[in-house]
Image 1: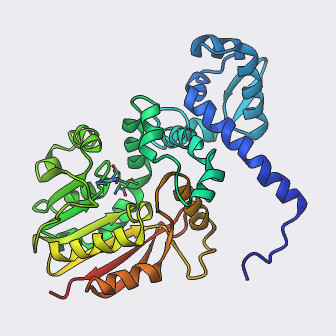
Image 2: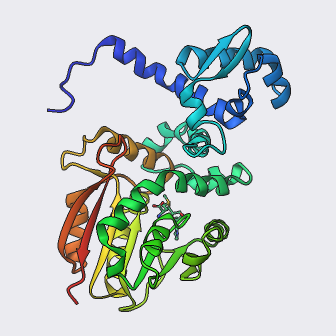
Image 3: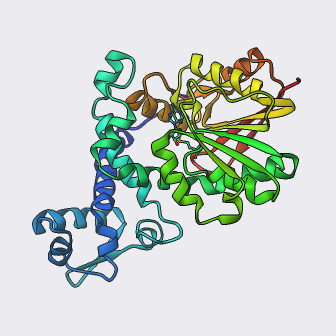
Length: 339
Ligand SMILES: C[S@@+](CC[C@H](N)C(=O)[O-])C[C@H]1O[C@@H](n2cnc3c(N)ncnc32)[C@H](O)[C@@H]1O
């Protein structure tokens, strides 16, 4: 039974200290420390380049060294290999946009006590993003960093050559559509998202002229939009259902079914919990993340999705893990519209 494993006092202290480590990493990334440690520099030089306080920069840099993300030699600080790979902007494995997003969303977590009382976010994600001018762009780009692997895996599993037309609901950077468009040169994709997001999607897709020519960007609100009738072979709902209530998710599935041709498939891609809701740990904590900045979102169980799919009239539901060995592994549920 999960929860009964003995947690030691040392682990308890480590976990409480965890927020300090997380905050040091997020703030250092947000302020651009790691870019400035290539080549190694003194705390005073880093502070001058970033227009920060030298004493405070030294305190943070020493903490980064203590945590293993930087080294200190002869009064100069440099990046540890993990930081060089993942925290210096422009590197292929760059995760800094995601850390910056976490730093911003930290403010939402700061209101968690009130969210627990209220039953949902005190202020929504858009509020936090708007407070940091220009961040929507980094937020959407950050999604692309983490979506490439799962997108390739999902496209390979579903065989893009079996799809003529697809609808990508809440498409974000368009990474998933792009994986399908790249796998079938006659496939057409419609990407539905909010106008503010699609501005960024448009710029990102411009780097892929072939697939871009077969992509239609459709501004709209997925909570209300009519998805059309018998127009697609595939409707993708990737990482949007955790933001929404069960009622909105059922409505998304009903409209998806109407939009599908007979034999067409809907794909739900998300973090999913086991029926006990306490595993995997990532999913249980992601639910708290949703509590902090959505009105009614949470992590759902595969069983909940399956029952909504059946109620919407879908059949032949198949479940499959994505990025199975990753700490943040997700799942897809693929269901068919019987017509
Ligand atoms: C977590 S992202 C997922 C993006 C992409 N599907 C993926 O898996 O990488 C959620 C997306 O839903 C979009 N979104 C949020 N609310 C929306 C709404 N009411 N109508 C349309 N899109 C919305 C956001 O702009 C964002 O691009």
